[in-house]
Amino acid sequence: MGKCKYCGQNAGFFSSKHDACEQRHQAGIVRFKDILAQCFQNNEDFYLHQNEIMTIRRDAYLSDDLCRELYCQSFDDAIEQYLDDGIVDATEERTVARFMQFTGLSQQTLNANKSLEKVVQSKVLQELLNGQVPSPRITISGNFPFMLEKNEHMLWLFRDVTLKMQKVHREMVGRSRGVSVRVCRGVYYRTGGFRGQPVETTYMEPIGRGCVCLTDKHLYFHCPAKALKIPFSKILSLDPYSNGLGIQKDGAREKPMFFENLNSWFCYNAISNLR
Image (cartoon, rainbow, N blue to C red; front, side, top):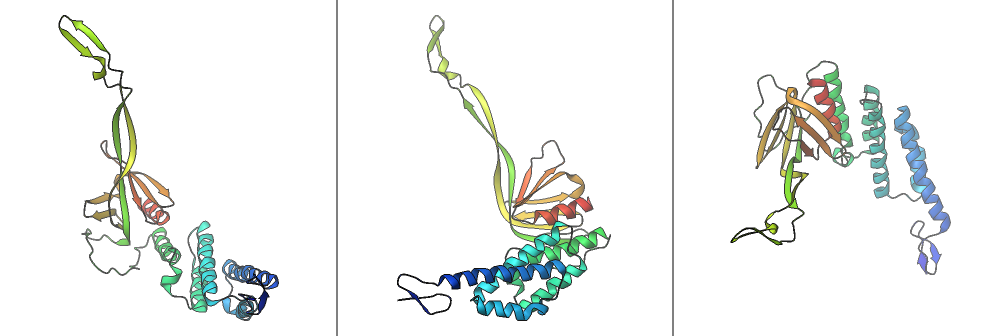
């Protein structure tokens, strides 16, 4: 006789749950997330819904692990909504702080998908837009391989960033069959010696993995294989992607670069407002 994974009572042969318990569980998840979304959207105090949330957790059989997962999902969704219409304003910041207090979740847990980091980066952008020098908001541990200029201020440090640079691969295609043709007495030249047409293929070649330091004047990159210092005034174009930032630097011999695994939203907005 199987037992229901929700209520723990007998569920019958070859069954691990009651249909009614399953429906109650799923409905509870939906309502749980709706309450959190409503609080974020209307900037309501989460504690006003504490009793209802506790009742849902009990009646819908929501485990602590599941609730933690739902909290994190709701937090990620809320931050994306906040950023859709600009930066995170002061009211939204207070809602975020209240949510952290209400859930008791650590910063590391809430930042699993970099959502909490985006809140802090939004504050940096707000100060830039107001013409202020951003206050330091990160603590650097370990080696810092960059020498900043006098009166230069660091905005953010990204680690585990992969630099890729555009390369061109050339190959010959269309080789002939190699028939021998007589040129003059005693001399033959095989047509197979003619290699055909050259074909060029462009691709992004990984250069190395290191860290990117974004300041109010430059973008720095350092890895064992290469070091870069890119003034904002020398950047011709910025191309933000979901997984990184593309940069085309001024200069006839400069090739497109791609920095993978950094927040392109933050870098694009910061550089665009500073250069």
